[in-house]
Image (cartoon, rainbow, N blue to C red; front, side, top):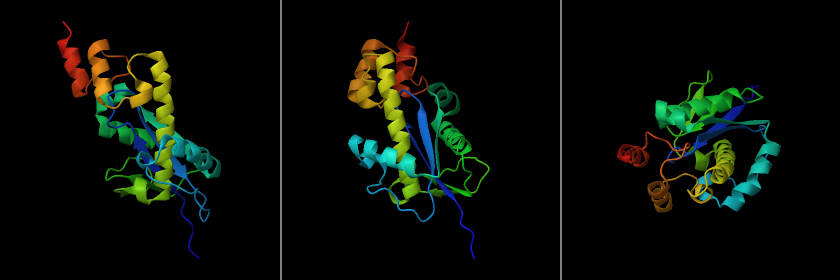
Length: 194
């Protein structure tokens, strides 16, 4: 009889943003249990669909956790290294240790466990899709809170990504404490300050 290996699906959100953290999630699902209907890459779902799925994922999972890398860590390490660090933090925070970690993409975090990278995994592997959804819901809520702390940047709408509105607000308001200073549009503004 073959032993069942628990798999943690892991994904990140926020890599391409100019502001805020990179947030990751890890999800371990009970083997053989059906997944909630409608799982997909979080980017392919509406906010309403993600908000509907997230509680079902959290309730059904054997374990789930979040990890993060702050804007300053993204600046200091680079976004890829910071994302992998945040993934390792999410795996380390799981209440149930998986036997394997499956990660969206082609870079593996160092988490002391066997890791399988899956390009497009957020759309094709339910555990990674679930992690993608939890990470996105958590980061979106955080960006909405940052919108209250740093009004005028539109964080609640664009979630820190480099939209024309965000770039315009950066030009008119300057750099906030949660902006990533190493990123070109932000760095350029800082260089222009006399």
